[in-house]
Length: 156
Image 1 (cartoon, one colour):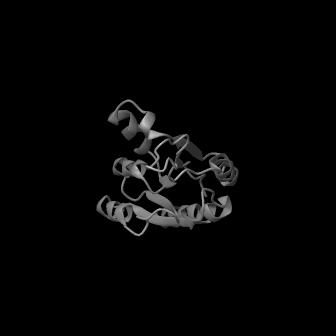
Image 2: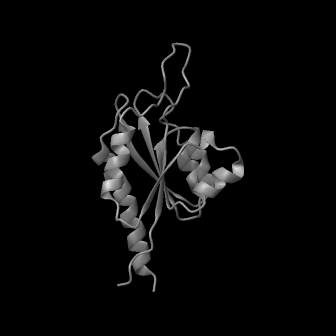
């Protein structure tokens, strides 16, 4: 079997994310982001690419589109950064996770957008507090990866 072409996974970073409400509390900050990213990197095949993105720091919409157009997977917390899925190719995968203290987590906004853009949407988990268990998120990512590998094996 020929070696599989590497895929790119884009992880949406939320650090340092400085939006706070009237109470001064920061929202949807992943306190153990470095641990999560390192765990994902260790699980990936060596020829795969894991990019960390902070779209709010990019100067143009073209520079945002450039990052997301080749991503086969987009992983991130529910929030505005996931709107970059509009630049992804049909058949790509979006893995969205939630924090249980976020009131709008039941609104299927990004699931609906994925349907419109012919992308696959996955719930990466609902996490308590501001940390996530890297292995739980990885299980969701690896499920999506397995779907892609099955699709690729079906093609002649």
